[in-house]
Length: 112
Image 1 (cartoon, one colour):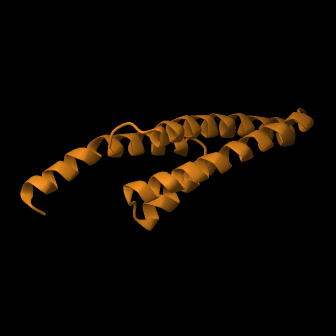
Image 2: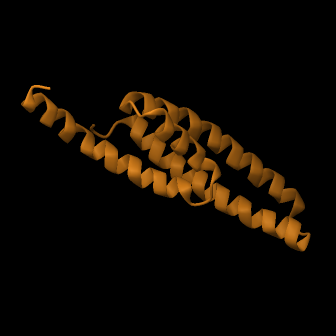
């Protein structure tokens, strides 16, 4: 699969969602562990929530385009809510998308 705008949006949202989630986790520690940064934690949570909605929609569309099995789609969708998982998922998706035309060309050459 060549680089499409959908893959570019996925990469950007995966990184943004992952970074926002890590910042949110830090603010949660500050809020509940030290009793500080209570108001800003709400705004960081909202930022992560909005980014995750975009990530969810783009990931679902990309999964449909690449014909992922249900388990793969669910893991990749959930990666936006697990710290560091969106970074791992982003690397795997980009690698798979880069290998996609090679698989299609090999199947066509074999007559499958």
